[in-house]
Image (tube, rainbow, N blue to C red):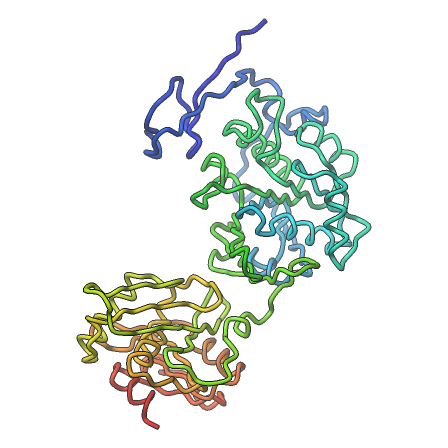
Length: 459
């Protein structure tokens, strides 16, 4: 009987060591090394076809000019938000990893995609739920499909046997941390198991051209559980975010080999599943019956999508000795910078004022074009004078109090016009070369904070 061999793996980055270490030399984390049973025999580990009884295929190098390339069309789903985040649809042979907190809706999203792709044969493999539980969730959705197959299995060799029989067009794994391979003798969810199972699925996707979606767990700090090499192996990494107490979910791209990493998709969680939100600006703007001070609307960009977002602020005299500076959804350091600019260049005495800033809708924003809206919101609350409801802002504020131009200003103006705004404040340098006459919205160019103040309270 062969002796059982063990090794130590870092649960954070996947680094391997023959002995236990207190601090990982690769990532610098402490107390992350865990002992795992390994199997050193390499026979049969080179190909996912071992589960199918096939033989390993050998490849030979080719010149770049000799490689036959045919542009394969992407698979367009009925989910516009997912297509946008993936870069225009599902790429054949791609490996997509979706991570998110428990209960955020990862399984619901993937099952909904499997049901909407009615013309394609989709295999949904679940290692966490039984087939009856998946059927129960599918019954709540308003869409059905005759080509959606469900398999409750965790062993990769058994999964590949069923794949050889069914030959699906798309494969969904829920989740990668529940799978185990016979080539590795450690428990499911360990670093070596996650790495080996992902490698087998990656080889399967590349050799057959079948798109594979992997659902991944996350750790308490928000990163995807397992070795960091997992995110390097896959083609696309999607993060499903949102507060479970709110109905809206955000799908972000942190890595994409086939498209932009700046795209964003917004969903609304309902009893019958996730509904794609085609116009997120409407849900991010509060419907107010009366004007309130401290509220301003800014035009931002998320990838190629313009969004109008509501900035709320409250400026009040400090009750205690040290004024409070609090921001939700906005960078606190940038808020302190804008407060310093308003005090130095605008002459506002904010040193003894408590300042609270909030981005409506639970969004986290980092677009510099929102600086002008933040300053307008702070001025409105400080002066106790509301911002006109037909006015929005798009501009970056410099340390000298100047209003700097931002990119894609034409998209921001068009979005503001579509939502019924009458005026938009932008940098004077942003309107150079812009055809102002084609817009029905009045474009107000400004160069300094003083000009913005006059535009705010001129009437």
